[in-house]
Image 1: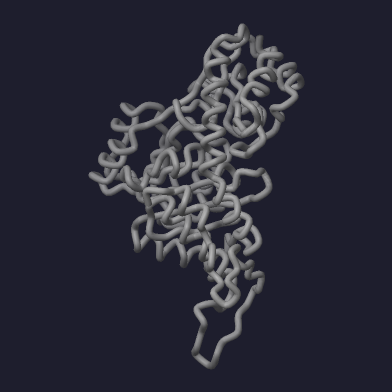
Image 2 (image 1 turned 30 degrees about the vertical axis):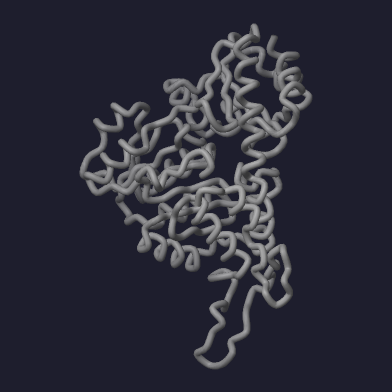
Length: 360
């Protein structure tokens, strides 16, 4: 699909030929009538399949270049669904810097003896640790919150040479800036709560694969365990995707302007930005200034999450990564002097002025 703006703007349009409705209907029914014994319209029960969710999942699969997608009730339910694909005793190689909720879940799996995990901070460490006992690799690129990127093509080639699956969390960049399946990954996950829906009003998760067997298994697991996204939230998701290219273009434009300004502010020691997308992390000269900065911003809201049209400022140490032990997180660079910015669609000059007032 070469023109995502067109594809997304038209997503779900004219899906109801009986009425000619432009916007797709919301099929709120939990159950569907059978035409007769042993017969089905293709829809029996909404946990299994729902017409509104079908539109969304087909759109998400196309957007990521996959063959199958599952929309779930949250980003973490999407990750949990993926890990149900693997046998007990599986070993996973994971990027060291990652969302604290993922780390918390992986720790729980390990504590219960369900799976084991090893972590790598660099591509050299990845190559050293990858072996035939590695069941799958789980990476964020860029990582949260240190914005480290990894060569997904090289990582995927190395993993597949040893029979390991590759799972990529693509939340930060979205398929508009990075399509991991085309770079060799087997599975992509998203917190759909973030950029894909983009208004801080929907909880959702996404899993996409280009492997038909994995796709069938994911659908079976989703039906069996029920991490279902409701029909209304699916409709809101579809509506939100229609403006994703416009939102992300503006957010990225704002972010690049803010990065340039941040480098001139007296309290800023280092700016971490991967060159694309709209997530920025900032190291300060004095961590003791964090409370006053969080209290002083007017347009940036001190809150968790990211990717919405409203700009947010987050303190990973006490928020998103609080469950990562202090010594561990500081050992790989997640130190108390770091704040994270999710840049919205406000006027870039207003956002820069808001940051300048507390950082310069």
